[in-house]
Length: 192
Length: 192
DNA sequence: GCAATGATTGACAGTCACTGACACTTTCCG
DNA sequence: CGGAAAGTGTCAGTGACTGTCAATCATTGC
Image (cartoon, rainbow over all chains, first blue to last red; front, side):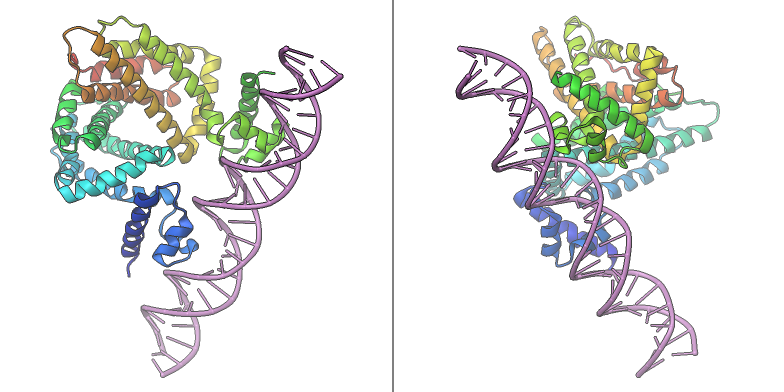
């Protein structure tokens, strides 16, 4: 069994436990026992208990980065970001996925510690996307983008995403609409 | 000695240790010993090791909230937020404060765990300011503000603040300018 | 087949953040 | 003065995580 497969197995079982008894109330020992491995081995597949939950976010982030790279160079950054977010919209369009993600979101929101870790990952993703956009801007002729402003723009786009997602927990159907509304409201003037 | 005074004393001594050996490398036992109290008593003044560093943020957040409340009701949210950020600008104008805050920022940035906790606090502040603005919008006649958009706007303003602060670590003098530039770039159309 | 080799694992001990319980002292107040 | 309240130290315990080591398992070259 590949490393990836084992991780998926652990994550699936762990999430069941988290849903049943809560994140903080579930010990790593319990997860390891439920999976059928030692605690020590659990930590060989996940660096921390947090990562079991946030691992999927990592992969989603990678997908966003790829999408962003694929956008045309002359497109406005704001639109490129909106298109990069599309995998999330698509993902939440599938009811099965949406239900799963809602459960995960609930787990994350219920633990301030885990929620903070989640924000940390989001920030890391913003940094990486900002780097990408900055580099793309440099490849574009006659445009000296302000790095600070660019980072703020990326942060603004994520603020829209975050606001729409928070809302989607309550009204699970309006995510796409909310995202479009927020991103229309905050659309910056051309960065160049 | 008042509770507040003891907390300040602990924070001061702890920060020295953090600067000297790093946050993760400094144990609570060491801090308690340096202050001259038991580990148990340390936790009677701070709920966690994180809080020693992030406590000042809490007080700053309260100040922002007060400032925001004091803005005129008919002012655009974006401008109210910019004015609420003023205490930070003023704080960073004083070289002594700036140096101290830069040291704290460095401690926070050096520990992903602490940095995540920092982001968590910022998010909490955003929620509270959003609540304030939402309530203020309700008091204003003829204006049905979209809560999702409003939260995104607050998030956008904080994204500007964050981008400017990250930049200020490198160029310590341009904070006010950076903040104005980013907030000009992301200024949303009127929320109402 | 088989032996050398490298990866995977479990068992164990240890560190560190944090908590609860209890006893002791100091301070405050009637 | 006496007794409640508040602050503190000690101790024991939990839970996340890490280092170490020996055993096992799979792979590869012969």
